[in-house]
Amino acid sequence: MNTRLIADAARNSSAHNGTTVWDRAFAFWLRRLVYTQSWEDPEADLAALQLPLGSTIVTISSGGCNALSYLTAQPAQVYAVDLNEAHLALLKLKLAGIRAFSSYSEFWQFFGEAASPANAQLYRKRLRPVLDDAARAYWDKRNIIGRPRYAYFTNGFYRHGMLGRFIGLAHVVAKLARIDLDALLTKDIDSSERIEALARLDRLFHSQAVRLLTRTPALLFGLGIPPQQRAWLGGSAPLNEVLYHRLLRLITGQPTDDNYFAWQALRRRYPGPGDRCLPLYLQRRQFGRMRNGAGVIIPVHAGLRQFLKTLPAREVDAVVLLDSQDWMSADEIRALWDTIDRAGSDDVRVIFRTASTKSPLEGKTLASLRELWRRDEERSEIGYELDRSGIYGAFHCYVRR
Image (cartoon, rainbow, N blue to C red; front, side, top):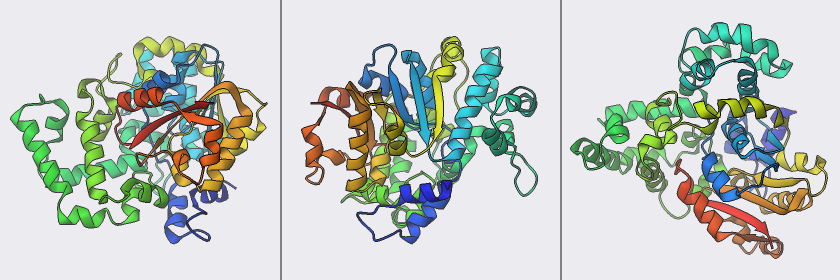
């Protein structure tokens, strides 16, 4: 069932009669653990949403970081919905850690540092007993040499997953190109080391080899980018050029001493425990709130539209779509917004990102949706400017007319 649902989600029915070979390949990859952390900035989300206390939020789960971080807004409920059972297993593991670990230091060791051999024992004794059957089966599963998945947390969790391995491969390429990644991350903006590293990065992305590689859809599977989204990402510009400028924004758009996305891209880890340069849910000052509020997070294995149909009318105050509409046909988008219209409160806010700079709702095909919804330009701009990940073309916030 899960495989079929994911295959349906990966298909762009408006562009193809049935799935392409790349669609089917991406559907296969999407069953795996793709993201060990979410790559949408939850602080940007909350600044754009401006939610009152006691709100009901529906979000796509992804790595679960943002669903947990939304607890800082003191919601009544957070439904974390995903078709990918691996991502839901990760969220459930984090929720188990919040309940089972009595101190921030233990929570940080397992989920922040995520590289201690002692974490295997922590999993077996503290986390495994409080997981449901599906999550326990996922983390207990062993590979061909008998190593269980929970061992990811003993040798650097953020080096795993499709994206983590892709970033590791990118680090090898950077080393071959003699790009000093530490200089990009920690050196002063006008230092000679950083200037040299940026110059080498420019040469790499504009080399013939990278131009050829970025024409292959399979290359972007490691970034979690499906075939249809690849078309939106590139647009009329060469894909190597688009990726280069997105990476530059990630590295230079915000100060790197408070940009944990840059740390994950350039070092595949977080800088350390505390209250800076970390997702909200991993900050020391938020640990008590995480423990007190974890019960309001409800993991849901379903498609987002199918789940919204099950909710009472006018139930939801915020819907977080991530970049999911980049995968959808116009008919699928229209059907999704019809369900949001029914389930959303009078003041519902809907946020999402796009690979391109344009919102799908602003085109001629979906003009009818604009009779009910308008893009809040101010909140959209706030979200884009605050989003430290820098990898998307635009941030959009919609409200009712």
